[in-house]
Length: 344
Image 1 (tube, helix red, strand yellow):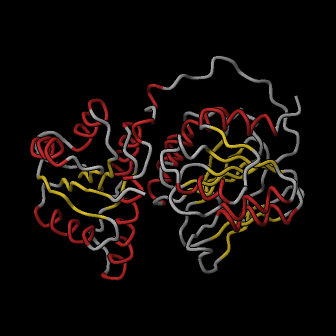
Image 2: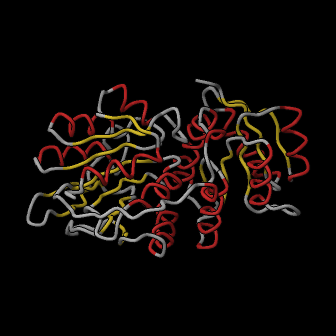
Image 3: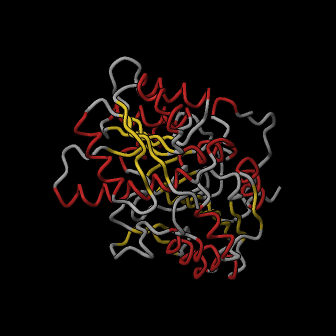
């Protein structure tokens, strides 16, 4: 694993000092420089050659989004955007993902000391994962080719469960485009900021052929609907029935994750229902053990290729656990999952 060499770009001297201090305390992370605007950052990138940039969305002159577009079009680097979680902030974050940002991190502007410490504690891990990401191999959304044909689909009774975190918004945007209007009942664990996920769901609602909604306690799992779980206070589990339902449960994190993909996958495995599971791009190892449980229970299981995932940590953990019957690049995953659920 490569150490992270970070350039911190923010027009506020106080925020530059704050984030530099946080990152310098993180293991295997070094702040190699700071910049107040795009012009300074451009020079610092050329001179210091960082392997990660943290970039403020709002800057005088060239905005963070405009500078991100420049970076990704001229010399792609892993970029972690720093932004607010207002409605406009979440929309801007989605734009940043489209342009190639590996992650969007919320500025803890109105947090209590405890909330602040918890939030910023994640930043070092995110930056280190970004330094080891596959940003240079990533194809921005607007460069991807759409499917030229529509596959006839008749649901064969298989349920679908997906898990992703860092890089997941971009991956899901691509993968779910392959889902038909009457798609298999699908549950997704998406480790990301809930406000950002809500905006993401709202955007996809106008783009997908099927229905996509936030996961809710008691929701029936029926064809044509995707349920996205992102509430960090609740796990989501599979409850057998006709139809099966989702249950939101309050309990401690599982292997550091909540909602936990391993817990969801495990409840599907125990239910003994026909199902398909997949682990996509992400940070950490959540989902690897659960996907192995699904495979051992006779479910179909897939892993995104760590070499092509935006962040390969989670897929690599699933590969190490021998959890996937197949390891596939992202552009083949959607078709593979739907193929397992299609009786046509």
